[in-house]
Image (cartoon, rainbow, N blue to C red):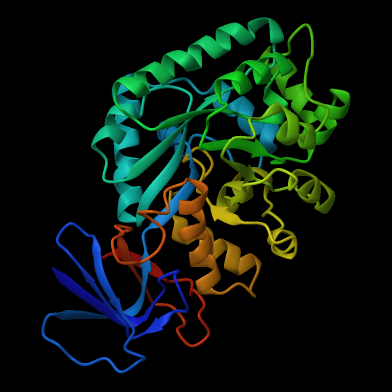
Length: 391
């Protein structure tokens, strides 16, 4: 049994506790959370830390299997250029890919992630996840613009799903994006995802997506042409709202990823879909488009915000804390309690894992992290703020 106290504890089940005490068993399960009302009595069995104790982070969007592409993709090329570079990168051998995945998994755990929704186009990460200290929700992603190849593309992801099932890994079948899916492929996927607890889709990540969907022109079309992937017959949804409201299963939670170019009309339109979460990955957005998502818009529209890191192809590290610091830098009115809420309990709810993760409450096993070198008076991160794992 261990006892932890700190200047503040953000439990997500009430206001931050000043000099509270957490008792956890040797397996990390929370036994008690004590509100001392700031009057902490010194006890030899209690570890006191100068900082803020929070639950383990929830990463709602990652591509672990792209970890071998770190430092291989140029910044600032826009989404079309980024996609072309991903396609044009020579794949390493399986051992190198596996080694990069293992290293990224370990570093993400060290950075405080307890739960992660990870996009999978292959089974490359499965064996590592089976042994990981992080719990993964595997979102098996399908894409393909050519309606004539939809059956084949769907069969490929079904094969990946079979491997996940054999390893008893939790998974859902999900679409990549509005701009990378034929309507035929959307239909196949929708019929096989009627019982999804969690679905995700890359959403309004670039300025060119609307142009591509409405008129089949623009930078994304040019990218497909240069890559030789433009199908003889185009069959796409008319817009992002149609995709969310009619092409994707309405079962369970839906996580919209990136949202870098979301506008108020689109936000209001898609909110007709219940159980919607908005995942922000600001460091990836800066890497690709040199732009952060419109956080104030999401707050004004009372959207449920969650946080992701995206991949090491579009980020320098898989650190939720660095994502939060970037958001605070761009939007200085944000405070630590709100940022932590998005990165913990909101993420746990989005992934239907709030019974164990996201808050510090009796009976849960969320992991415990210590935020240090923070502005405790104004509840703000500092450039040198860092996180260490207690449990």
